[in-house]
Length: 365
Image 1: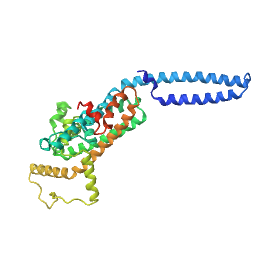
Image 2: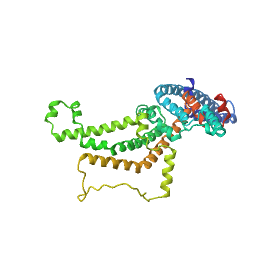
Image 3: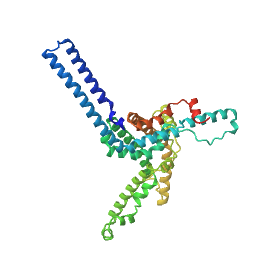
Image 4: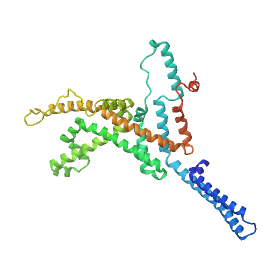
Protein backbone atom coordinates (compact mmCIF):
# COMPACT_ATOMS: atom_id res chain seq x y z
CA UNK A 1 0.00 0.00 0.00
CA UNK A 2 2.92 2.37 0.61
CA UNK A 3 3.74 2.18 -3.11
CA UNK A 4 0.49 4.06 -3.80
CA UNK A 5 2.21 7.25 -2.62
CA UNK A 6 4.88 7.03 -5.33
CA UNK A 7 2.59 6.59 -8.36
CA UNK A 8 2.65 8.35 -10.73
CA UNK A 9 6.34 9.18 -10.47
CA UNK A 10 6.32 11.89 -13.14
CA UNK A 11 5.20 14.71 -10.85
CA UNK A 12 7.64 13.67 -8.13
CA UNK A 13 10.54 13.49 -10.59
CA UNK A 14 9.71 16.87 -12.14
CA UNK A 15 9.32 18.50 -8.73
CA UNK A 16 12.65 17.08 -7.56
CA UNK A 17 14.44 18.05 -10.77
CA UNK A 18 13.18 21.64 -10.68
CA UNK A 19 14.13 21.97 -7.02
CA UNK A 20 17.62 20.60 -7.67
CA UNK A 21 18.18 23.03 -10.56
CA UNK A 22 17.01 26.00 -8.48
CA UNK A 23 19.10 24.97 -5.48
CA UNK A 24 22.15 24.48 -7.70
CA UNK A 25 21.71 27.97 -9.17
CA UNK A 26 21.24 29.52 -5.73
CA UNK A 27 24.24 27.62 -4.35
CA UNK A 28 26.41 28.80 -7.25
CA UNK A 29 25.42 32.42 -6.63
CA UNK A 30 26.07 32.06 -2.89
CA UNK A 31 29.50 30.61 -3.66
CA UNK A 32 30.60 33.67 -5.65
CA UNK A 33 28.97 36.31 -3.41
CA UNK A 34 30.92 37.45 -0.33
CA UNK A 35 29.62 36.13 2.94
CA UNK A 36 27.96 38.64 5.22
CA UNK A 37 26.75 40.81 2.35
CA UNK A 38 23.09 41.69 1.88
CA UNK A 39 22.95 39.73 -1.40
CA UNK A 40 24.33 36.64 0.32
CA UNK A 41 21.71 36.89 3.06
CA UNK A 42 18.93 37.27 0.46
CA UNK A 43 20.01 34.19 -1.50
CA UNK A 44 20.52 32.24 1.73
CA UNK A 45 16.92 32.99 2.66
CA UNK A 46 15.77 31.97 -0.83
CA UNK A 47 17.68 28.70 -0.54
CA UNK A 48 16.16 27.94 2.85
CA UNK A 49 12.68 28.70 1.52
CA UNK A 50 13.26 26.53 -1.57
CA UNK A 51 14.31 23.55 0.56
CA UNK A 52 11.29 23.98 2.79
CA UNK A 53 8.94 24.35 -0.19
CA UNK A 54 10.43 21.22 -1.76
CA UNK A 55 9.70 19.07 1.28
CA UNK A 56 6.20 20.53 1.63
CA UNK A 57 5.39 19.92 -2.04
CA UNK A 58 6.74 16.36 -1.87
CA UNK A 59 4.66 15.57 1.24
CA UNK A 60 1.54 17.07 -0.34
CA UNK A 61 2.10 15.15 -3.59
CA UNK A 62 2.74 11.87 -1.77
CA UNK A 63 -0.38 12.22 0.35
CA UNK A 64 -2.47 13.15 -2.71
CA UNK A 65 -1.12 10.17 -4.66
CA UNK A 66 -1.83 7.80 -1.80
CA UNK A 67 -5.39 9.02 -1.40
CA UNK A 68 -6.22 8.93 -5.12
CA UNK A 69 -4.51 5.59 -5.80
CA UNK A 70 -6.11 3.91 -2.82
CA UNK A 71 -9.56 5.05 -4.01
CA UNK A 72 -8.81 3.95 -7.58
CA UNK A 73 -7.55 0.61 -6.22
CA UNK A 74 -11.01 -0.08 -4.79
CA UNK A 75 -13.05 1.42 -7.64
CA UNK A 76 -11.18 -0.26 -10.52
CA UNK A 77 -10.77 -3.75 -9.10
CA UNK A 78 -13.21 -5.30 -11.60
CA UNK A 79 -11.43 -3.57 -14.48
CA UNK A 80 -7.97 -4.65 -13.32
CA UNK A 81 -9.04 -8.24 -12.75
CA UNK A 82 -10.81 -8.35 -16.14
CA UNK A 83 -7.58 -7.39 -17.91
CA UNK A 84 -5.51 -9.81 -15.81
CA UNK A 85 -8.02 -12.61 -16.37
CA UNK A 86 -8.03 -11.89 -20.12
CA UNK A 87 -4.23 -12.10 -20.26
CA UNK A 88 -4.17 -15.33 -18.26
CA UNK A 89 -6.79 -17.06 -20.40
CA UNK A 90 -5.19 -15.74 -23.58
CA UNK A 91 -1.91 -17.39 -22.63
CA UNK A 92 -3.76 -20.62 -21.80
CA UNK A 93 -5.67 -20.66 -25.10
CA UNK A 94 -2.51 -19.86 -27.05
CA UNK A 95 -0.69 -22.55 -24.99
CA UNK A 96 2.10 -20.20 -23.93
CA UNK A 97 2.30 -21.37 -20.33
CA UNK A 98 5.54 -23.17 -19.44
CA UNK A 99 3.96 -26.57 -18.80
CA UNK A 100 1.95 -26.32 -22.04
CA UNK A 101 5.08 -25.54 -24.03
CA UNK A 102 6.90 -28.43 -22.40
CA UNK A 103 4.05 -30.84 -23.11
CA UNK A 104 3.85 -29.73 -26.73
CA UNK A 105 7.60 -30.09 -27.18
CA UNK A 106 7.54 -33.58 -25.66
CA UNK A 107 4.59 -34.56 -27.85
CA UNK A 108 6.34 -33.31 -30.99
CA UNK A 109 9.47 -35.25 -30.12
CA UNK A 110 7.43 -38.38 -29.51
CA UNK A 111 5.52 -37.89 -32.77
CA UNK A 112 8.80 -37.70 -34.66
CA UNK A 113 9.79 -41.11 -33.28
CA UNK A 114 6.38 -42.86 -33.20
CA UNK A 115 4.10 -41.01 -35.66
CA UNK A 116 1.55 -43.84 -35.91
CA UNK A 117 0.77 -43.67 -32.17
CA UNK A 118 -0.08 -39.95 -32.14
CA UNK A 119 -3.77 -39.04 -32.33
CA UNK A 120 -5.10 -35.99 -34.17
CA UNK A 121 -7.72 -35.01 -31.56
CA UNK A 122 -5.27 -32.90 -29.54
CA UNK A 123 -6.49 -29.33 -29.23
CA UNK A 124 -4.32 -26.96 -31.21
CA UNK A 125 -3.16 -23.61 -29.82
CA UNK A 126 -5.40 -20.67 -30.66
CA UNK A 127 -4.04 -17.48 -32.15
CA UNK A 128 -4.46 -13.97 -30.75
CA UNK A 129 -7.71 -13.32 -32.63
CA UNK A 130 -9.33 -16.58 -31.56
CA UNK A 131 -8.38 -16.00 -27.92
CA UNK A 132 -9.75 -12.46 -27.96
CA UNK A 133 -12.95 -13.57 -29.68
CA UNK A 134 -13.57 -16.19 -27.00
CA UNK A 135 -12.95 -13.73 -24.15
CA UNK A 136 -15.19 -10.92 -25.47
CA UNK A 137 -18.35 -11.93 -23.54
CA UNK A 138 -16.47 -11.69 -20.23
CA UNK A 139 -14.44 -8.52 -20.69
CA UNK A 140 -16.76 -6.22 -22.64
CA UNK A 141 -19.41 -5.66 -19.91
CA UNK A 142 -16.63 -4.71 -17.48
CA UNK A 143 -14.95 -2.36 -19.98
CA UNK A 144 -18.25 -0.65 -20.78
CA UNK A 145 -19.15 -0.17 -17.12
CA UNK A 146 -15.65 1.10 -16.33
CA UNK A 147 -15.76 3.71 -19.08
CA UNK A 148 -19.27 4.82 -18.15
CA UNK A 149 -18.94 4.94 -14.35
CA UNK A 150 -15.22 4.97 -13.47
CA UNK A 151 -13.76 7.34 -16.05
CA UNK A 152 -12.52 9.73 -13.34
CA UNK A 153 -10.02 7.09 -12.13
CA UNK A 154 -8.52 6.40 -15.58
CA UNK A 155 -5.76 8.27 -17.35
CA UNK A 156 -6.21 9.75 -20.81
CA UNK A 157 -4.55 6.85 -22.62
CA UNK A 158 -6.75 4.28 -20.89
CA UNK A 159 -9.88 6.27 -21.77
CA UNK A 160 -8.84 6.49 -25.42
CA UNK A 161 -8.12 2.78 -25.69
CA UNK A 162 -11.36 1.79 -23.97
CA UNK A 163 -13.27 4.01 -26.39
CA UNK A 164 -11.50 2.29 -29.29
CA UNK A 165 -12.38 -1.12 -27.86
CA UNK A 166 -16.05 -0.19 -27.51
CA UNK A 167 -16.09 1.18 -31.06
CA UNK A 168 -14.69 -2.10 -32.41
CA UNK A 169 -17.17 -4.05 -30.28
CA UNK A 170 -20.07 -2.01 -31.68
CA UNK A 171 -18.88 -3.00 -35.14
CA UNK A 172 -18.88 -6.67 -34.10
CA UNK A 173 -22.34 -6.29 -32.61
CA UNK A 174 -23.57 -4.74 -35.85
CA UNK A 175 -22.25 -7.73 -37.80
CA UNK A 176 -24.02 -10.21 -35.50
CA UNK A 177 -27.22 -8.15 -35.50
CA UNK A 178 -27.13 -7.93 -39.31
CA UNK A 179 -26.81 -11.70 -39.44
CA UNK A 180 -30.00 -11.98 -37.38
CA UNK A 181 -31.78 -9.42 -39.52
CA UNK A 182 -30.90 -11.36 -42.68
CA UNK A 183 -32.48 -14.50 -41.30
CA UNK A 184 -36.19 -15.37 -41.68
CA UNK A 185 -36.60 -14.17 -38.10
CA UNK A 186 -36.98 -10.58 -39.33
CA UNK A 187 -39.63 -11.61 -41.85
CA UNK A 188 -41.73 -13.19 -39.12
CA UNK A 189 -41.18 -10.22 -36.82
CA UNK A 190 -42.44 -7.75 -39.41
CA UNK A 191 -45.24 -9.78 -40.97
CA UNK A 192 -46.40 -11.95 -38.06
CA UNK A 193 -45.71 -9.96 -34.88
CA UNK A 194 -46.89 -11.47 -31.62
CA UNK A 195 -49.72 -9.21 -30.53
CA UNK A 196 -50.31 -11.31 -27.42
CA UNK A 197 -47.16 -9.76 -25.99
CA UNK A 198 -48.92 -6.37 -25.92
CA UNK A 199 -51.14 -7.64 -23.10
CA UNK A 200 -48.11 -7.34 -20.80
CA UNK A 201 -47.70 -3.68 -21.78
CA UNK A 202 -51.22 -2.28 -22.11
CA UNK A 203 -54.49 -2.79 -20.19
CA UNK A 204 -57.12 -4.94 -21.83
CA UNK A 205 -59.61 -2.07 -22.28
CA UNK A 206 -56.96 -0.08 -24.17
CA UNK A 207 -56.14 -3.02 -26.43
CA UNK A 208 -59.82 -3.62 -27.19
CA UNK A 209 -60.28 -0.07 -28.48
CA UNK A 210 -56.87 0.10 -30.19
CA UNK A 211 -57.05 -0.09 -34.00
CA UNK A 212 -55.64 -3.22 -35.60
CA UNK A 213 -52.93 -1.38 -37.54
CA UNK A 214 -51.63 0.24 -34.33
CA UNK A 215 -51.49 -3.11 -32.54
CA UNK A 216 -49.61 -4.65 -35.44
CA UNK A 217 -47.15 -1.75 -35.57
CA UNK A 218 -46.50 -1.82 -31.82
CA UNK A 219 -46.09 -5.60 -31.86
CA UNK A 220 -43.68 -5.29 -34.77
CA UNK A 221 -41.61 -2.71 -32.88
CA UNK A 222 -41.48 -4.99 -29.84
CA UNK A 223 -40.31 -7.83 -32.08
CA UNK A 224 -37.48 -5.67 -33.41
CA UNK A 225 -36.45 -4.81 -29.85
CA UNK A 226 -36.51 -8.53 -29.05
CA UNK A 227 -34.07 -9.14 -31.91
CA UNK A 228 -31.75 -6.53 -30.38
CA UNK A 229 -32.04 -8.25 -27.00
CA UNK A 230 -31.26 -11.55 -28.66
CA UNK A 231 -28.15 -9.99 -30.21
CA UNK A 232 -26.98 -8.86 -26.78
CA UNK A 233 -27.77 -12.28 -25.31
CA UNK A 234 -25.65 -13.99 -27.97
CA UNK A 235 -22.74 -11.61 -27.45
CA UNK A 236 -22.86 -11.96 -23.66
CA UNK A 237 -22.60 -15.77 -23.66
CA UNK A 238 -19.47 -17.47 -24.98
CA UNK A 239 -21.33 -20.71 -25.79
CA UNK A 240 -24.10 -18.96 -27.75
CA UNK A 241 -21.58 -16.79 -29.56
CA UNK A 242 -19.40 -19.74 -30.53
CA UNK A 243 -22.35 -21.80 -31.76
CA UNK A 244 -24.12 -19.00 -33.63
CA UNK A 245 -20.95 -17.88 -35.43
CA UNK A 246 -19.45 -21.37 -35.85
CA UNK A 247 -19.60 -21.14 -39.66
CA UNK A 248 -17.30 -18.11 -39.69
CA UNK A 249 -13.51 -18.32 -39.59
CA UNK A 250 -12.71 -15.70 -36.96
CA UNK A 251 -8.96 -16.18 -36.68
CA UNK A 252 -5.67 -15.08 -38.18
CA UNK A 253 -6.35 -17.51 -41.03
CA UNK A 254 -9.73 -15.86 -41.69
CA UNK A 255 -7.99 -12.49 -41.74
CA UNK A 256 -5.16 -13.53 -44.06
CA UNK A 257 -7.18 -15.73 -46.42
CA UNK A 258 -9.64 -12.95 -47.24
CA UNK A 259 -6.81 -10.54 -48.00
CA UNK A 260 -5.07 -13.05 -50.29
CA UNK A 261 -8.20 -13.77 -52.32
CA UNK A 262 -9.03 -10.07 -52.49
CA UNK A 263 -5.56 -9.17 -53.71
CA UNK A 264 -5.63 -11.83 -56.40
CA UNK A 265 -8.87 -10.60 -57.94
CA UNK A 266 -9.35 -6.92 -57.18
CA UNK A 267 -12.69 -5.73 -58.39
CA UNK A 268 -13.48 -9.02 -60.17
CA UNK A 269 -16.65 -10.58 -58.75
CA UNK A 270 -16.44 -14.30 -58.32
CA UNK A 271 -18.78 -16.34 -60.50
CA UNK A 272 -21.22 -18.39 -58.49
CA UNK A 273 -24.03 -20.77 -59.23
CA UNK A 274 -26.45 -18.84 -57.07
CA UNK A 275 -30.00 -19.02 -58.34
CA UNK A 276 -31.61 -15.60 -58.74
CA UNK A 277 -35.30 -15.17 -57.99
CA UNK A 278 -37.17 -12.66 -60.09
CA UNK A 279 -40.19 -11.07 -58.42
CA UNK A 280 -41.01 -8.60 -61.16
CA UNK A 281 -44.48 -8.27 -62.65
CA UNK A 282 -43.65 -10.61 -65.54
CA UNK A 283 -42.41 -13.37 -63.28
CA UNK A 284 -44.46 -15.88 -61.41
CA UNK A 285 -44.61 -15.05 -57.71
CA UNK A 286 -44.65 -17.81 -55.12
CA UNK A 287 -48.06 -19.38 -54.74
CA UNK A 288 -48.14 -19.31 -50.94
CA UNK A 289 -46.28 -17.88 -47.98
CA UNK A 290 -44.53 -21.13 -47.14
CA UNK A 291 -42.95 -21.23 -50.57
CA UNK A 292 -41.91 -17.61 -50.22
CA UNK A 293 -40.32 -18.30 -46.83
CA UNK A 294 -38.40 -21.26 -48.26
CA UNK A 295 -37.10 -19.00 -51.01
CA UNK A 296 -36.01 -16.45 -48.40
CA UNK A 297 -34.25 -19.13 -46.36
CA UNK A 298 -32.39 -20.40 -49.42
CA UNK A 299 -31.46 -16.87 -50.44
CA UNK A 300 -30.25 -16.17 -46.92
CA UNK A 301 -28.14 -19.34 -46.92
CA UNK A 302 -26.53 -18.45 -50.23
CA UNK A 303 -25.88 -14.89 -49.09
CA UNK A 304 -24.25 -16.17 -45.90
CA UNK A 305 -21.92 -18.37 -47.95
CA UNK A 306 -20.94 -15.49 -50.23
CA UNK A 307 -20.47 -12.87 -47.51
CA UNK A 308 -18.97 -15.26 -44.97
CA UNK A 309 -15.31 -14.56 -45.88
CA UNK A 310 -15.83 -10.80 -45.59
CA UNK A 311 -17.67 -11.08 -42.26
CA UNK A 312 -14.93 -13.38 -40.97
CA UNK A 313 -12.27 -10.88 -42.05
CA UNK A 314 -14.17 -7.94 -40.59
CA UNK A 315 -14.74 -9.51 -37.15
CA UNK A 316 -11.18 -10.89 -37.10
CA UNK A 317 -9.81 -7.41 -37.78
CA UNK A 318 -11.96 -5.97 -34.98
CA UNK A 319 -10.70 -8.64 -32.56
CA UNK A 320 -7.11 -7.93 -33.60
CA UNK A 321 -7.62 -4.22 -32.93
CA UNK A 322 -9.21 -4.98 -29.55
CA UNK A 323 -6.26 -7.16 -28.54
CA UNK A 324 -3.88 -4.34 -29.51
CA UNK A 325 -5.81 -1.85 -27.37
CA UNK A 326 -5.89 -4.26 -24.43
CA UNK A 327 -2.12 -4.61 -24.73
CA UNK A 328 -1.83 -0.83 -24.27
CA UNK A 329 -4.14 -1.05 -21.25
CA UNK A 330 -1.86 -3.73 -19.84
CA UNK A 331 1.16 -1.48 -20.33
CA UNK A 332 -0.58 1.12 -18.15
CA UNK A 333 -1.54 -1.41 -15.49
CA UNK A 334 2.04 -2.70 -15.32
CA UNK A 335 3.07 0.71 -13.99
CA UNK A 336 0.62 0.53 -11.12
CA UNK A 337 1.30 -1.05 -7.72
CA UNK A 338 0.09 -4.56 -6.92
CA UNK A 339 -1.92 -5.22 -10.08
CA UNK A 340 1.11 -4.56 -12.25
CA UNK A 341 2.93 -7.34 -10.40
CA UNK A 342 0.04 -9.78 -10.93
CA UNK A 343 -0.14 -8.99 -14.62
CA UNK A 344 3.60 -9.29 -15.11
CA UNK A 345 3.59 -13.02 -14.29
CA UNK A 346 1.03 -13.73 -17.02
CA UNK A 347 2.80 -11.64 -19.64
CA UNK A 348 6.17 -13.25 -18.98
CA UNK A 349 4.88 -16.57 -20.37
CA UNK A 350 4.48 -15.04 -23.83
CA UNK A 351 8.11 -13.94 -23.96
CA UNK A 352 9.58 -17.40 -23.34
CA UNK A 353 10.93 -19.19 -26.44
CA UNK A 354 9.17 -22.37 -27.49
CA UNK A 355 12.24 -24.50 -26.73
CA UNK A 356 13.00 -22.92 -23.38
CA UNK A 357 14.50 -25.54 -21.04
CA UNK A 358 13.21 -23.68 -18.01
CA UNK A 359 9.67 -24.27 -19.26
CA UNK A 360 10.31 -27.99 -19.28
CA UNK A 361 11.86 -27.81 -15.84
CA UNK A 362 8.94 -25.90 -14.38
CA UNK A 363 6.58 -28.50 -15.84
CA UNK A 364 8.49 -31.30 -14.14
CA UNK A 365 9.80 -32.91 -17.32
